[in-house]
Image (cartoon, rainbow, N blue to C red; front, side, top):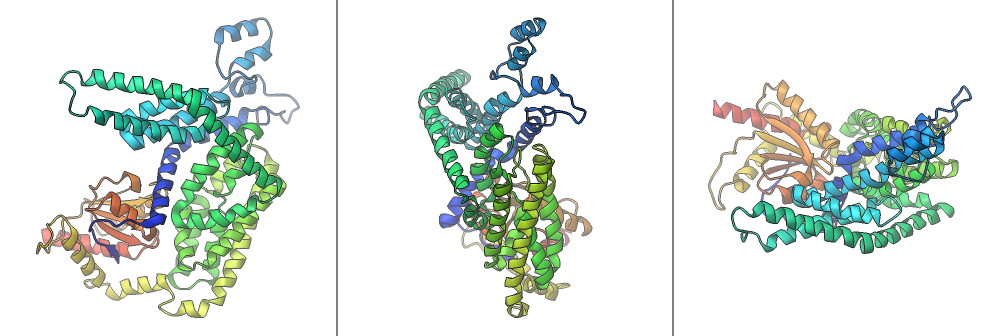
Length: 541
């Protein structure tokens, strides 16, 4: 079992720093994905190009429902007295101009949710409130959806609030705490909202314009597929959520509002490259990688957990070239044929992709499907060539990292594991005992946490697998949960992460015992964790 000590965490370098930034960016978006999906469904159903906005199969229109919900005019505000007057006078067009959900949701609701979430990440509820107030100024000071503005102003406003509170921390007379806290937050929120309206908003508008122009330039010159050279390797390094939700989602929302769909939603979320990679390992891999790849392919393609294929790519780094080629092929297909999604596909499951692609029309759905198939095929063919070329070397024990890990576990089955002994020594040396202590017992493990970047997909899967193993072993009183690394609070007895993320987990929970795994789905280390818990139970008896 690959374990890490609980000594003071070391700085993880550039990779860990970028991952930490990516986690924060995705942490603003991921909790609000349901709101994006709701807006996406409303958009694809009720805008003029949507299902109800278009002409029905029987030759008549679904209006006024579509125009009432989607909004038929420029006004994003609801003025019911004026709307009722317009309707009474028979001016239905003006009535429709007063109402609608699409515009207000993308203009106000989504950015404010992002800002509030970002503020809470930095400074709890108080930070979330001030961040929301400040971001409102940025929104009103511009004429486009301010997702980027919310992702910058939100955490900035919360950080300023935190620094302000430090000025009089412990200096407020008893009984005046609520008065000072409420008025200080209100006044600061007002100042930041005004600053956002006059200064920050126009700056963010300029940045958004530049980024949009850059994307348009890439599309015009048909260079957008080259983005895969950056995207695919970054995904394998667990920066997928940062790229998708930190960059493509804000820009894609603006495109989708104008054109009804955006290709940017499919650059990172396309499940084709990952599917092709796992299918290649299914047919041409060796050892446990070959055995586990079919199950991983099902989870990746239908469950949308892309992280599950990252260990396969990292075990054979040259296959990243196949992912780049597959990703570029998928982007090229969508770019040439006009494919795109109406809203972000999160998770990147073929089911979510279908839901987001069908809104702009059946033709668009077929194009998106074609891009998935082409991306998977290109990745599969190139990966197959790479795996076949190195098959003899991979059959050696030292080349088959998956097989070597499982063989080690099987060799120790039925007796005390050497790795388990190492785990015990690690806990005894780096647990809660003082330095130089002769403690030899492991503290009882009652709380096991699986941690990943976003705390939703792969970690939830790993937690479910271990939970079932513990249940089969008759262990019912050990809590197994999953959460984002950023939310680790140091209370976990044991933290399980993928190897590339362990350094960050140690920094957030330095006093916990840490276990690194290659693959959350079928890590051999799970058996040894179960053995360790069982041995603890016997000792307690």
